[in-house]
Image 1 (cartoon, rainbow, N blue to C red):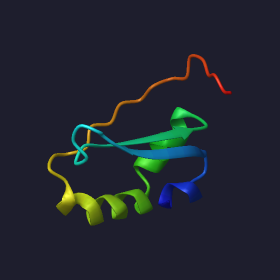
Image 2: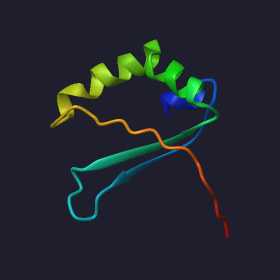
Image 3: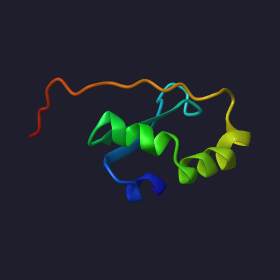
Image 4: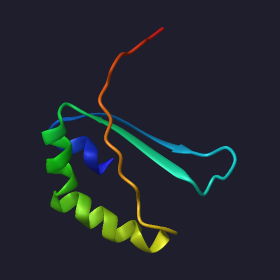
Length: 73
């Protein structure tokens, strides 16, 4: 919810694995790579990470993807 107030934020989802609900995927869409990088280095994100860090089993892995195509019903 903190990212929603960041410039360039479009959408986000938090997903839990059906096989292992302790595995969480956070998927967010940003207007540009520059907007994501600004969020990644922002004080609100750093503060949020410090709050959740004690709950993490391992350091989060970040992967960046580019939209190639979209489909909607």
